[in-house]
Length: 269
Length: 291
Image (cartoon, rainbow over all chains, first blue to last red; front, side):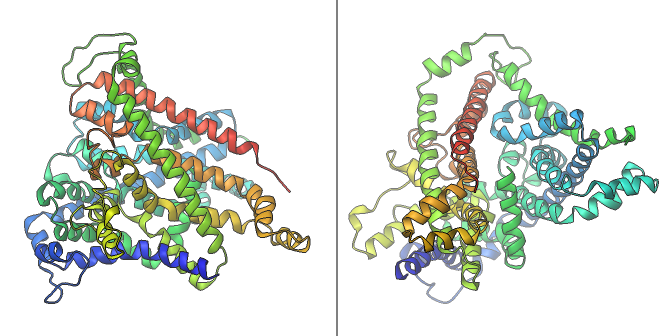
């Protein structure tokens, strides 16, 4: 029993200590960090790093870009995936099965496999250095997993509900918006959280397609701070905190949904 | 019942995007893998299977890369699965403390790879890093290392970071699997006087196989895709000792502009992943039982 409790504590410390160090380091100077990496700052907490990072970097711009890209990517992935899932569920025949297989094939192929031809395609389409380009690629890359999860869910819905609305003369679109969507809300919200975390944190696509500062998202900007600040960890960690803040705050309040959503993504994927 | 033809319209937007940004690039990766395209000029030549021959016989870095990927994968799969399972067994009951601990262990999953990379670069830093500091405090100075700078251990240092990053997520999957095992089976085992180990072997493990399949398969794929972490922490160095297939594709394509060759490696990468996934599902599915 004691051993179990001890193990739980050690694991908890392995998570907590690095996070506390990140917070502390962000309110220390570089000299203080060099002198005593684990200690408290001498003259109290200093928020100079936060001021400096907003002065030296276009943080607000990166933040806005991440927000735009994430919001559009999540909502359109959900909408398009729900439509596909609805189509597959309604058709319930071989065409539906083939389309389902075609979409889920995408879960097997890592993004890194197609980065080379995707890059030249984006170049040809003039979609590099463009938030629209990022959003389009994001949608198509998460469509497979979203289709997979949502189809799995919609297939469990009672068929009679759809049929009853057909008798009432509802067209497919009405059936989709009035029956399928409201009934799929639990699955849609779990998928949404999974997609939020993925898109907010994505590095690969911005790294490939964005070179202009005006279109960089937070993970890419953060990566490039490394080049500027080298081992100036107070600055790097200030960046880490700002970039992670929205997810962390959302996690504190929606913990249960996060755990369920991200795990659903993993299990289904 | 007849379904109106308008149902096909539901596939249209998704299918167009998916075809353009996923299916088309996948097929063209296969096409370019037989060419010497540099990614910039309009002209290229077909070189048959030269790129593939080069990967397997003439490119020592690529072969090293496959080895690194295997080292990374095995370390992550073994440690992550063991840690996740061991701790899932302890925090299985839904008490307040356990629910809190699960949420805490899960926390790193929501961070970006770049953030995790910075945090661990600081932990591993040879001069001011937390790890060497703590070893010093414990009087274990002789264990202090340049964790990311030593070519012999850097790949394992990265693997440990990956475990820290994702073990909590796998733990949750195990907890879900464990909670689905009927309580009565444990009572029967108790009545029959089974030891803790016997109960684990006879009841828990066989019924946990589906969750274990998911965890192992997912961890494997994840470890092949660990591009972000490696890219941000070591960039493949020192001396290519942490170069994995994904980062190597990036280097070949975007640093030395050999798009044709990079495409060939991508195709090999895809085949390896498909093969491993298939084998794992086969191996783990076979010991599935039902009660």
